[in-house]
Image 1 (cartoon, rainbow, N blue to C red):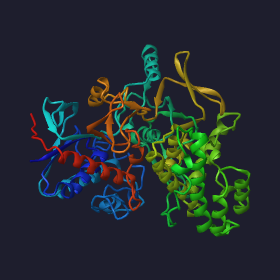
Image 2 (cartoon, rainbow, N blue to C red):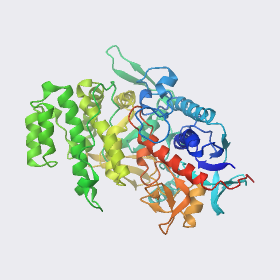
Image 3 (cartoon, rainbow, N blue to C red):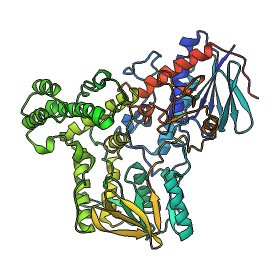
Image 4 (cartoon, rainbow, N blue to C red):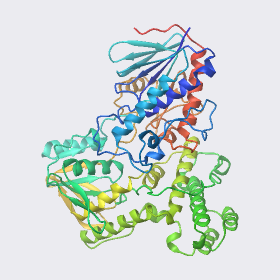
Length: 585
């Protein structure tokens, strides 16, 4: 008799789960007889976010060599390792290139097809190109109701929908009402590829709130996407040639600067020797205040990674060898007088010392007399960032990013999350490709982009949107306001019909906007705190699942693979224990 599992969601998260289920089936089922039902209205592999019908202009934010959905020898998991090509190997191009999103869709589709084609005999994968709209308990299993009226009966269900849409927040609804009453335009948070940008007029000022990855996509679609071109001058300077249909983007945010660009050189150093200080023993018993209890250990871990690379790879810029520095560093509390003295002694150049406050808020305390002064400062800031991220002499910055990836995973596995740290991590480690930041600088020099500063505030004034920042006096007004940000996760505002149905009946609980699961096995937890025996959830929108967000890096023992493998084995074991008769009605 066949066991059966439903995976709701066929994007990268669901694809990884299907691959791990198929890979583990022979081991756990003996002579496998398994039906895997994959449910998603979008084609499997890319799902909605990575669907094929996106502009080629939109790129991935990771180099092709840093993206894989195949396990390799570095992955420590119980299931079998099934190697396969990285995105760069599959494309056969430059490892450091940034692939388009349609190209990534092709890779993800390949991974899904490969997982299905290489599944053990007796494992059948059924793709249902519709939405799942509800779940119900049946004797020994689950009934999944589909949007087309059919019902699928299975032993267990994994919710893996990925990042979902949400209804507008209270502030967004209020701004939308103001826009409707006053004849203004307002675009709330969302994926740039999903927004209707046709209504943004050419040549008019547009206030843009947000300077992260969503802003970069918006910038591309409203400039290159409207016929503008970038060319190199004889001296190598990138210059923007307007197409005539672009708006004038006035952009600001809390930091007032864009995310740091990706490093543009191959990292030759050894992986930082972390984790070392951020441990459960060092944290003690919770609950924890992040800035008081957790951040000092995180900061020490990150600094250890940074200075390890600086001193070992660039010893002429240090006065101590690594062994002496590491021993003294381990004995000091973060930011203690002893640690500050050690760093000053070991690292003579101020520019080589790590300053988290300045990294996090580069415009903090800076005031300009006029907007021209801010633009000049920003041009220099972008030029320095591009130069530093392209120069392997600053490889300690890359080691810091690797340390951030390690720390982010540790915190997720400990069940610790903090909005400020998530933003800090994204700002330093999840920025755009260097060429995109070069394009931003060229657009600013061409007058298409104007920077507004940090601490941006937007209100409604005399029939127009008004944006102001303490960084520079005055403000700008416009008839169009765009929120260049992705919506924050929110179960209470989720538009997914399945999530909504479970939420409204109290069969699904929310914690800090995320779907609540039991940490040990990712079983869905209801409003009373009871885990469900046959319902599971996995992905970045699940409590503890932030570590599985983004794409896995090859040869880094990626958390995505470790966690997906563990969940696949748990769910397979659950399915084997029941194996009741299934049907699709």
